[in-house]
Image (cartoon, rainbow, N blue to C red):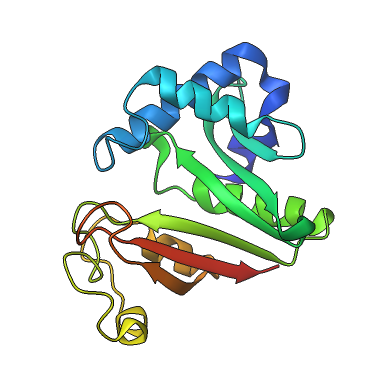
Amino acid sequence: MTDTEYSIVDLALTGDLGIEQAASILFESFRQDWPDAWPSPESAREEVLECLEPGKICRAALDEKGKVLGFVGATSQYRGGVFELHPMCVSPSVQGRGLGSALVADLVERVRDRGGRTIYLGTDDENDLTSASSTDLFDEPWRHIRDLRAKSRHPLEFYRKLGFVVVGLVPDANGPGKPDIMMARKI
């Protein structure tokens, strides 16, 4: 996929059809590995609508016909100095082609335009996909952070390639042995 095959715009500009397409992508892209994240199309639609609330950033990648291929959202925190990236998804049919990276790069520019200094995110490990899963993270937490690795298909390495670093772990956030991995990057 090249830059000429898609454009990135505010999701709000895509109207109801774009919102429905974004919700469908959110539901489908998380369904296999994180089925509890958005367990129904309705819950995914509610999440997309929350991303469109005033003051939030919500950007969508569109193909040449205007169909949503993926989107990213962010919410201002700490009086506008920090933004939480949530959610981010790309249609499974176009994953691995640089679209997620382009969405994050676009988000970085929008956050910079608003005076943000940092973007952070949480990337859960509910399915034993990283070395932080199924272990006692209270035992030497900084060692676990230092040695953290993805075992399988987990977004950890994707975000690392985009300049995010692990800044913390929330042990047992999603149940025993199921942490949330906190990552951040400078703007």
